[in-house]
Length: 192
Picture 1 (tube, rainbow, N blue to C red):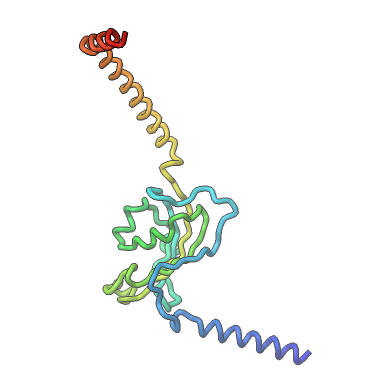
Picture 2 (picture 1 turned 120 degrees about the vertical axis):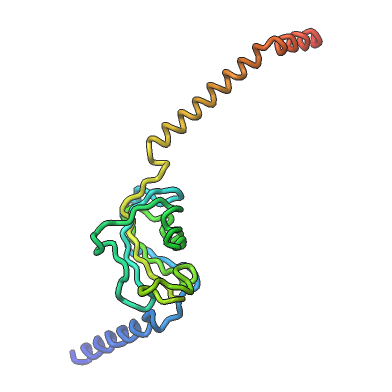
């Protein structure tokens, strides 16, 4: 019984030492965008794609620190809503956009953004030191893709119908011109 208890305590001590030894402060900062899925929904309804309008909750922290400097869950609880390719350029975080590409509604990912892709040599005053990686935990709460919008498809059908109609109308006008008619008749006589 005592040996079993000593064995278990030793195992816990070794695991705790390993976890502490592998903390971010002892590791080298990444040089490329890294990410991992923390939670994935059973059914993936819509995926984030180019030109999607999405709503996300996120928490951001500096590499090696446990405190979040940005948290939409706590900051009045309002998620961030934006269109891919537009809003994140303003924050100079296009790599965050790369990391959330392909996420499902309800999925949560942890993204480790290297310093040169995050805030670089300037950092973010009073929040992110210069040349420091940033870690985001992002949850996609809503995806509105243009291809799922019924107005997109009704517009595509209307444009296609208009093109076919006006193309046929233009061909009818061209074929009914007298010069074309005479040209067709002369070709028919030559072929006989």
